[in-house]
Amino acid sequence: MRLFRLAFAGMIALAALAMPAAAATDDFLTIQLKDGPVVIQLMPDIAPKHVAQVKALAAKGAYDNVVFHRVISGFMAQTGDVQYGKQGSPSFSAARAGTGGSDLPNLPAEFSKTPFERGTVGMARSQSPNSANSQFFIMFGEGSFLNGQYTVIGKVVSGMDLVDKIKRGEGGNGEVTNPDKMIKVTVGKK
Image 1 (tube, rainbow, N blue to C red):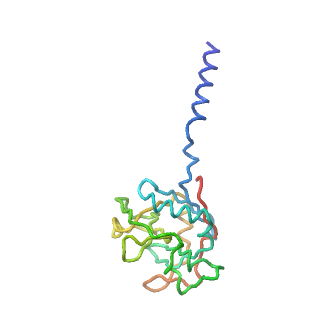
Image 2 (image 1 turned 45 degrees about the vertical axis):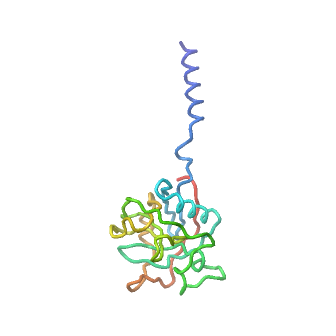
Image 3 (image 1 turned 90 degrees about the horizontal axis):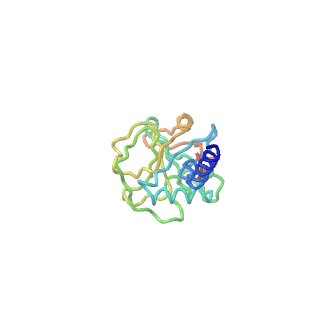
């Protein structure tokens, strides 16, 4: 009987090794802010092309030192302009931050029924639904008026209190003077 238990335990251990570990997923984006890390669980099941592009940009360091160029209290914090919003790069321009994208192509809309609520991460775009590229925003509160009109790519699962500390902009457009930035952005495990 003891030999049977050992053999059974060995089979269980082998089966566990053969199964992929849920924690080993690379569907998490970690943004290092001045006050600490913010972890976003990405949603490739609802926005595969957008998630893949954000992950690719993060993996090559494109989001490192990119500013939060538009931050509106009670609404959202927008970042991700790797063309003009990257502090320290020759193309950085506080005046133009928010008008650029990346060297990757714009993406077709991947709208879903996932609601915009506190902590939701969505892709920024121009008037064209198929113009999202690299910029994204994190919701401070509920924004149901965005539902079905912008692509949701994820949800903050840790560090929302740090998102709340991002320096706010002034005026109706939320343009930020001396903005906070994403120090480092990585893709990987939670």
